[in-house]
Length: 328
Ligand SMILES: Nc1ncnc2c1ncn2[C@@H]1O[C@H](COP(=O)(O)OP(=O)(O)OP(=O)(O)O)[C@@H](O)[C@H]1O
Ligand SMILES: [Mg+2]
Picture (spheres, rainbow, N blue to C red):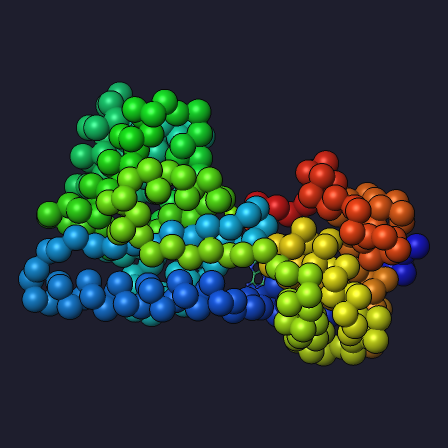
């Protein structure tokens, strides 16, 4: 069923086009909401600093299923703000520091990881509260205005109520610090809502943004537009087989209704078209079917781009079995 004939090397033009595809970030309503909020927060903080006032600060909370595009959105956000916010961690002043929440996410572990992300040599013998005191000192020294914690739903996993409360209190205290408040940018799966909702004071200090599921009818037109946009970026034609409602529904289903996965599958399909047929390629549904096969090792009857009754296929289950899936 594959349309590819493998070629040993790709032309520089094809490689450049593929790079362009990977670099393309499709702005979403949730990205625009984050962008607007962060802009306001930065402006407010700069005004406070100019006036010499220290007030409590606020932060952002981004929630979405796996593959919805949280990590990518935060990366794009920090890239976009790199002109107004000093984001280079190799510099002494670093206004944004981001890290992945470690596992297990105990106070001690999260504190130690944050210290390391701040470039502080952590010795490993301190207890949770002492580590967090050290974190606060470092945040001030580095001039850190925002701390990004990705995978923040893990902050509540395998924790007792008491431990969870102390995590919440610690996070809150970073934003309420009278010496140097640091705004949190928490991103994670929907369980993150439970942690934040546990404490109304924390909830009040975070602007919530959610990356919702794609909708099989409402999102048909935007999804078809995105496929067109990627084909245009690759300077190739999109065939009628990828320009109709039924194709869009198959793609949305194959991506388990997640925006990020939809974009990722599309990038891979366009890349496959370019790699196999060069700059004369025409993007068709077969490229999507081949990509799905590569990702899931699914037989045709279990491939949403081929099977007639595709709605019964559980794409997540199969993704879960595929060690090659780029679901980070
Ligand atoms: N707006 C976008 N434009 C283009 N590609 C995107 C966009 N959002 C996400 N993607 C792509 O979707 C894929 C999944 O995104 P990402 O890794 O950010 O998801 P996630 O929500 O962080 O998932 P997880 O919870 O599993 O960490 C990535 O390959 C990424 O490049
Ligand atoms: Mg992620």
